Image 1 (cartoon, rainbow, N blue to C red):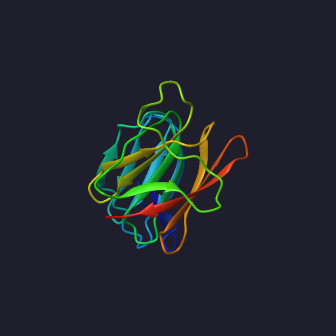
Image 2: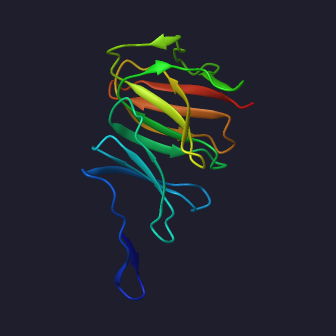
Image 3: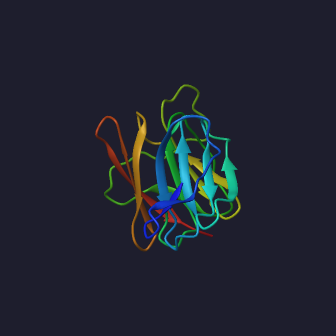
Length: 165
């Protein structure tokens, strides 16, 4: 729900998740609100009127972290279970000196972590990244969008280099 602070009342109530909402993130321009729920979905909303723009329900597990890139063109969703999929001439890999494993092709089966990268404007998943040994609980992009940092439950931090086509 959005609250009108001047009128001290609810302006818009957002409904669509079936379970607890754990994470929220606004796109840099404020045009998209992402919400991650225990129901296994991330919903992308228009925060001005509550319209559902996209529902990301092809998640391999529970979403536990959300972050938009500085230009709003990428949405990172961290959580559980992963494989690695390369996409469209771009890619993501461990950053220089950042200490962190790359990906391997194919599915990782019971691997308990995930980081998926989405296009928030189309609702399409761009890729799934592998590299942590436990749940990804935090994610952040550098201001210029060239790096992404992720943290997991074991206290590991990985720095990823972002390469766009």
